[in-house]
Length: 77
Image 1 (spheres, rainbow, N blue to C red):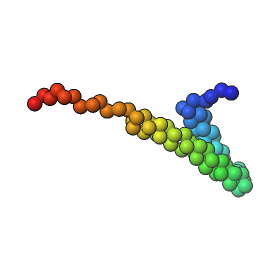
Image 2: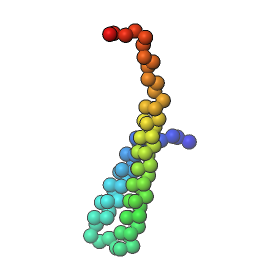
Image 3: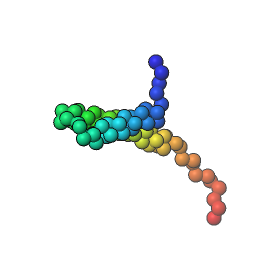
Image 4: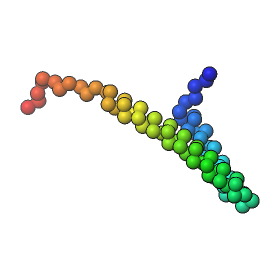
């Protein structure tokens, strides 16, 4: 199984979302199709948000786990 990079997955989802919005703009769209596309757009947006939240959480964890240097006993003043 090939692991997909979060950035690649995010780009793919954004591309899908863009296509969904283009289809929503079609004049010949029936109401059931419109409802399905809106639902699909919400699902894709939730996936995008989840990936971005994981990225933010990882950055926050990295910031929390980075150790602050201990103060030196050498004083300038």
